[in-house]
Image (tube, rainbow, N blue to C red):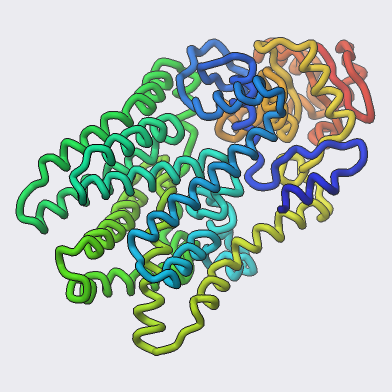
Length: 510
């Protein structure tokens, strides 16, 4: 709804970018779609001036979306959001299917599903104290935010859940059809989001060993099924690894692509009431469920899988890896299911007090609802931000005209120098490189920010600017009021060729 509203209230003569949340990353996904739209099957970095790498068969999902957009003559941003909605629907569908494997009562199924849809943490409270709570920005850790952010988070999480469901049923019913379905989903997952295969391998391996210990004998047929599921997921991550290892540009990008785990206190605050309720549920499952349902019952085994899923994910988050935060993806479902058990075992059975979960859902949803309010508020709040496209959701007529000129006249190997905001936006609309466009996908991004500021500074000698142009093989300068605030440069006096000018936007060819 915030996106629809932002589109409906677009100022006359301007164009809505289509992004209100995590737009910096969103524009990089649009750039990958633009590569696919123009015929590429191999990913290359567009948000950096360096060129010449071999690329890698990775981000295939976005390359395919770009091809679909081109085939249907639709804009990249429209196909992006259609895929996001479809991915979100699939995530909610498989989440509910997983919930029905755990709860028999429809009331408890609904509570767990409502938590999955909207639950977050204490960010709504901590933001008043200046805390950058994860439930406002770590999209992969929450169902609501992941659906709001992009297409690949909900799709990848849905595939993860689907593989776990089908593998669980395969282990229970000893039917290979389930393993084959899980294998197909794993193959796709490996190309959509390879990091999740680590979570998947950890959860299924630990669960198999747990079953072997509980049954006092290994399930060798089950192991063969798990091997099948695991092996079919390897092409995607292998091609990604091979491509990045053999492309110095992608290797440099990966080395600065840091997404480390947040500190424990911040992480716990991001899930609020879900954490203590889940701990209560784990105690209840270990202490009471074997007696109530039977130690070897399917229900008891399934809840053991949920606990293992949560604990394995927490263990992965604790690893000292530069991408460990990626493992948050998928944790929301087991947390919400366990929180529902904790709520019923504590509030209903212990205190005999029932609000049908409305209070729990309401409190847990505050940060998610807050994100909707913030997304709408950003449309109206005054700002002067040069770097964040979230704060600038509209492009002026002059900027649109410059983009259209580049679409018609520029070449893919050419490089545009502009400010951080338009540098982030351009590659998603034109198959072209920018000098700086993203904190991670721009090689040596901090160095380039410094060089950019030096270029736009009025006191910089012309010889230094010319050296920057030659050293970095720059072809165009896109100059607006934002670039003017970076350093008061007067490009009209530099002798560069003016190829486009409208409404305060100038495009120069070096």
